[in-house]
Image (cartoon, rainbow, N blue to C red; front, side, top):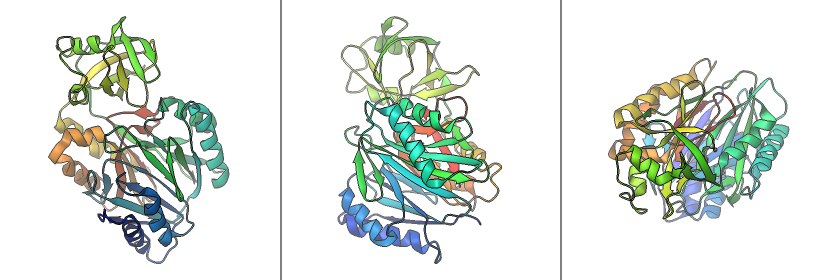
Length: 388
């Protein structure tokens, strides 16, 4: 039986309970009388979030719920935008079985938390020949690649990993994930999807190298301290032809989001890492997943047209081979939306056009999860998709 998707939204910002119940009613109504098996929620962080969840669960009852705050919700070719409201997806079980688990405090315990999330959610869903795990996490909880390492230790290479890190509309102050009626700061939540057939993940970024390879020689937590033995900021600015210190701490993000790092892979591809900020000592803070010492990175560049071009490729790669798609789940980087500016609505429209009659649902996040090869599954400035 094909999975059925019902989608609802609300732009009602003054009353969180009313917004949640309005969006949930529309989503449940879209199931045409069938009962939801799981509910996904993406929302602006501007709501009273516990009250928002109460409004949603007043409609959906005890149906398992996961979600996160973001920087704009995506559904059916529409974009609510920053501070726009809340979007709710209600899904029937279809051919799948679901299991949900959460960890309330993952910082300093990322790998163990990943293992726990995978084991608990898998146990709730039960065994199956194929599976995917949808992962949502606080973007400020540290090096999220460690969280994925923990998940991978349990899943191995046959289970797809998809999802995104919660956002607070690019303030980088407080982000939240949701599990049933809980609002978790500093936590993570996972949805295990037990399946009878493979569930591939689509993943593209559209960036190309503009600099020479640089060796990461020193890191500290989520900061690159040195590149090639030089202060990281100086080496980075040199690659862009900028005099050392010309980029101030305050205006660094406006340039760095246009020129992320590409972490070079053995097959010649690159996984994107964005330097979110720099400090007075010249260290670069990488959003969520720092390249390890001994790895090679290149400064990257692109254009709006190139970044838009990959939208269809991502959706098509996720749809390819799926026997009966019911919904395309999208995890898109908020930096992409900021780069697109007024053209962000064009990207959202292109995503739905690529999906055809299959509904799209997702959000602009702050770090994307997609394991396509090897164990690395954390990305920045990237678009990922999972089809159910």
